[in-house]
Image: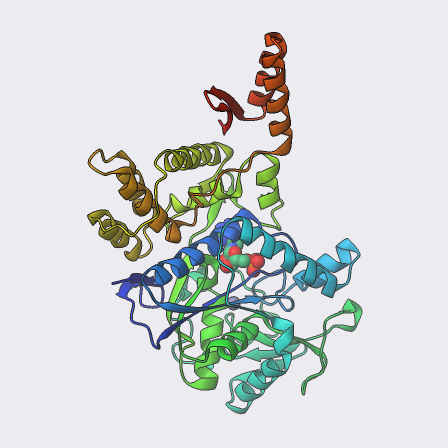
Length: 451
Ligand code: AMP
Ligand code: ZN
């Protein structure tokens, strides 16, 4: 029995799939920059969700969109299109920017062992369907036109924003009204401004322009999964604007919500506050690697916190995660035996944790408990951990690749040692240590380990 927290009902619910195949839609990256580890925390939580469902033997169809147009620098439909802005700043075309950062995103999620979605769909692939949706909303009387676009009138929908804390939005936020009728109204179609010289723009019944970000997701989700589908996910920032606006369009146009369950991952923070591409403090997967961290140690760090609690990122926390992961992998190496099916109460304990709204910290605790249990045979331990790793995705069995330069130094040291030049051998050992590795001499020769 899988229980998931539904932001819509503000309760943990027993998951009951609508069809044989579970449909999941996850709001994907806006491809104007490299994803930062904060963004990637959202995709990691969604990966755990998908892996948990697969582990429970559900069939899953996971759709992720690529936002390659229409996401403006403010979520309230003001400012410049993020992709067009990046293209202008980097001297590339908007299409090149989108293509480049989409590929970079795919590489990043692979490094973090995030299972690839079953379907990737780009916003620019569905412009016609988006225009059709706006037409339908217009026919049903939910839209109005201003000098800069076609807007959705949220006052026309009785239960608009039931997911969000609207009082907080109204009281706490200064909304740029422009010609909007209500603070929560949002753009469905924006007109290109002649002075902007947009590269991505299309003809429409209302004039040349581009779709609103919230419209894109409704169309792509419906196209790939049909509605209603099972689970819609995103980061917690989507609770107040993006997701209520998706729901509003679906209810107005089709008379029903897009999805049954809406799930949101909490933010990754820095000690000084929010991590963001625009805050200039973004850490990327490549930055982690440059600092000598394996991307999977970041995965371990994320798993050690529940997806609905805040997590503060720091190099100390990452170092601790790296050391735990290395220890874990080393233990798995030591107990390696034949692969076989094992049954054990620990399997139920692990399932209870993960099926309880994806409680990964508890699931990790079960992993360590298995390793410490003196009653268990190595074969049981090994096979239990491999099984758990289907959900955790920490590559527990995969040998750490030793970098080429370390291999070369180790060989040189061996040569020096054999020829009796112990001073040189010692110097090389220190050099290897400074790079974070240890050489151990065994009867069968030397072994290199990560410190
Ligand atoms: P974007 O590429 O800006 O559209 O964002 C992609 C995803 O990352 C969205 O689901 C956001 O909610 C999420 N996100 C952005 N910043 C953070 C953060 N600091 N921590 C966790 N998730 C985030
Ligand atoms: Zn979305």
